[in-house]
Image (cartoon, rainbow, N blue to C red; front, side, top):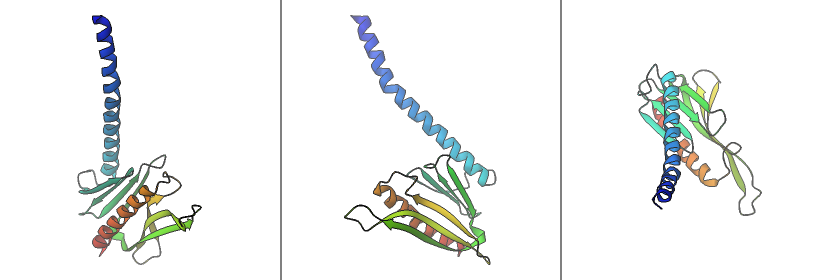
Length: 162
């Protein structure tokens, strides 16, 4: 009787502990990968990116001293990394693309939200894609959060380029 109780107890402990251990390992690996990306764009230090946000598998980091902005999108496979030097830009705006909706209660559905940066003296543009209907699960809450994230970072970008 004692042996069977011990076996059942160990089995229950494994069922509880194993998923938690795997989750912690995955988070640690993801954090290391993000720090490596920021390290490569931040002149040898990921700690210079003092302003950071993470929503819906998107990480936005900003180095206010060097004015470098990094957007990491982990929703796409492989993950997309966009790094821009804001010293080269003088204008920023949000662009939202929409399509007609198939749902009868809604007229349109937003398919993309991006920040468009325009370079000084040229017509070259850089796009920071915050929401893409194709790559992300079409859940409306994802759009609202990504839209809020884009609006917040647009304000930070506009403040740093003026």
